Length: 152
Image (cartoon, rainbow, N blue to C red; front, side, top):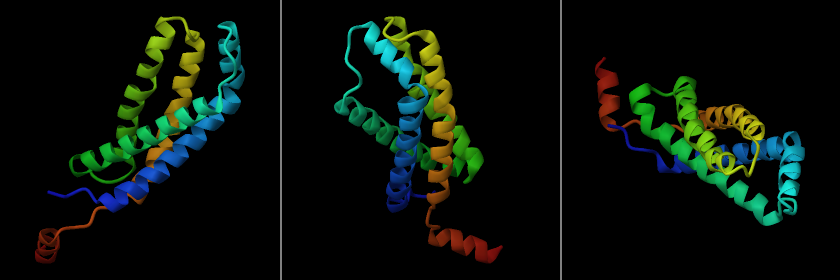
């Protein structure tokens, strides 16, 4: 059984988190900016503050590390590569985007269309971030792996 390569996990997690944060900032800061502004204004709230932006970026860090950790965990079962990265991205997306939008939509804090757009934009965000992170993550082969390969 392979052990998770913690050094590569951290490196891949940082890269995944940064890519995710940049893509999320582009999506929410440019593509959905007017929708967020209108939604906040409708409730008499000010635009998103610096603290709010920091919180969203910390969310990206958590999701990026969670995604790469999950990729490393399922990699021995599904194999290394883009297919496993995309399976992992789909699982992370399902739990992180639609579930995150459920309460705000149910309580009418944001319109359904806004939540749907944010969720749809989340698909390429997490897919791209995890594909790059998965390409960085490598596991060290154990001594028994080398013996088995040499015998084959």
